[in-house]
Figure 1 (cartoon, chains in turn orange, green):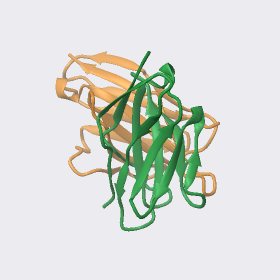
Figure 2 (cartoon, rainbow over the protein chains, first blue to last red; figure 1 turned 180 degrees about the vertical axis):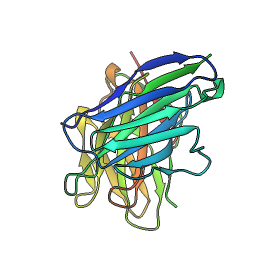
Figure 3 (cartoon, rainbow over the protein chains, first blue to last red; figure 1 turned 135 degrees about the vertical axis):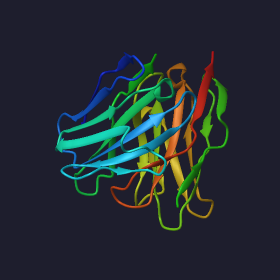
Figure 4 (cartoon, chains in turn red, cyan; figure 1 turned 45 degrees about the vertical axis):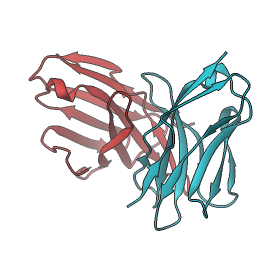
Length: 117
Length: 113
């Protein structure tokens, strides 16, 4: 079945530095990927929709300049948290939509636990 | 805009008992509905989904859900709970093919021995 690989699984960084999170579809081409953020004991909140070869579509309230999304190929999307601060500490999850006809299948990565100290 | 309400942030059942997790949705058009399970510090795994056709959907690990349009519900059930079912469960809705998913707040299922 479809597999989405997300790295790193955990990262600790200093305040003010940038962190890049990678999301790869391993056995299918994902024209669309989604990035979510999940606070402790809360649901997943969509941050942005990433389309291969075009600019990402951000949800209201998400800072584009802080959360940089790049979807340069059909199998890779990256989320860069720039100038990270402790309030950016969270669990980030990516998801790729399988483009198979009528599949409506969304495969999720295993998530990245970001801690900013 | 579509939305999802999961009744009960925590549900506790005994091992072997019926599991019932409730999900109601709001949508002005026919929805696509999903149930996902999440174990601690992991991503989401699809349990089942409803797109079209039969309203009773069977998923993995013995779970099933029934789409009831008149009640705008998509409750998740399992006849007999197992300890390994303890996790957090999310109901989600999408109203357009390939569109983003909107998630409910989640329900943590606890299974008592």
